[in-house]
Amino acid sequence: MNSIPDWALAVASPLDTKMGLDLTELSAERVVGSIPVEGNQQPFGLLHGGASGVLVETLGSMGALAYGYPDRAGVGVDLNVTHVRGVRSGRVTGTATAVHLGRTIVVYAVEIVDDEGRTTATGRLTCHMTALPGTTPTA
Image (cartoon, rainbow, N blue to C red; front, top):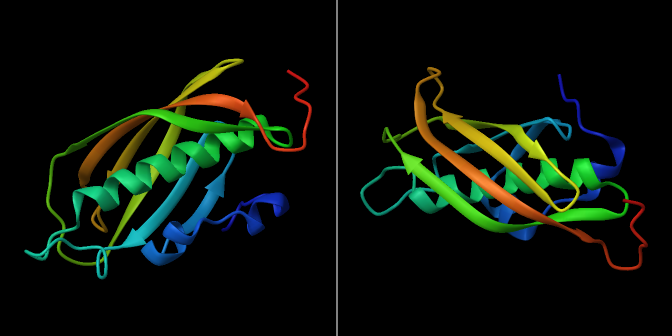
């Protein structure tokens, strides 16, 4: 099942496209997406830590956008990722869960798991909510 709002179908960064991101669920409270390990590895064949960071930042930022839509978006101001297990193949899936949804600050906790459901990394993204260009925020 793909529960992505229609407005979000056109929102994809060139980096997310290069990483092979597949977003499957999007709401202000929860965002789910995955990336392949292949093509996102470091020189020793493991999923690159930066790829996990991109996944955390993307999922949290998309949640912030869903929260602020249609006139506000979140801009990441703090990113933390802890790697707990290496991955060499398959896909990793991240689930971002809202921890705080405030007027100016939102926070998401993200768990990344491998195809077997084992945690490979955890992360947190804090975003500052800001007006989208050409809009007048309502909140």
